[in-house]
Image 1 (cartoon, rainbow, N blue to C red):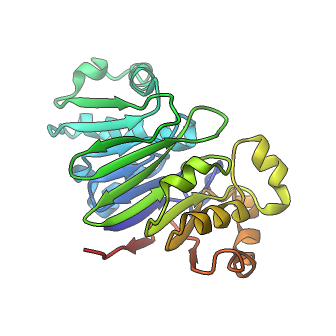
Image 2 (cartoon, rainbow, N blue to C red; image 1 turned 45 degrees about the vertical axis):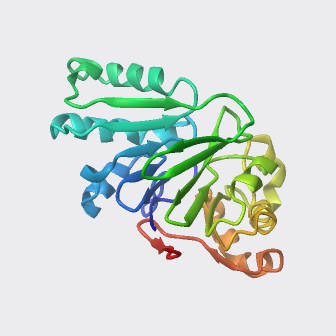
Length: 257
């Protein structure tokens, strides 16, 4: 399983980092932050996407979906697409696409979009196909979900945005790669909690408790990203396995076939 980090920043884009989006192999997409369409074109992976999983409907995780659909419309895509997301994903997507004044709205597509909306429940929800996709509700400012992606004995868990929560530890249990948001440094833990986010220490504690093999910290707020990087040594006192802070377009590969 190959993971490509298309966008890694949180809340504010920078010259070098765009909003959250992760590519699994070349066909499954986690979140659609602004900037993802251009990066998929660079990777020549834009036409191979079959499934898109949206964690929540905040703009930095969702706004890139519309440039992606716009591209699919103008490039005459014919292959069907599945979008998994929180409640109201379909209605919100259709409304925004209509507001963009696309002639014909959703009726303009030459392919079907299948929306699978997650239920507002604390139970783990599961979809099976080429991948086993598991999802759990998180604790954020709006309804949000984390995802676990499994294929060929490989597994990756992506938190989306959340306060530290036992449901995420359960979802990430024994996964090879745990990708966790780390928006604010520990010094600002009260602000992180107020706005529904995690700190680096929150992330390493969840990775440790989940027995994850590798922790990847994403969604770092740009003004504080250097502080998080400098804290890696201290974080390893809690989670003594590999901790990675990726740049945009970095990749990781898992081989447990």
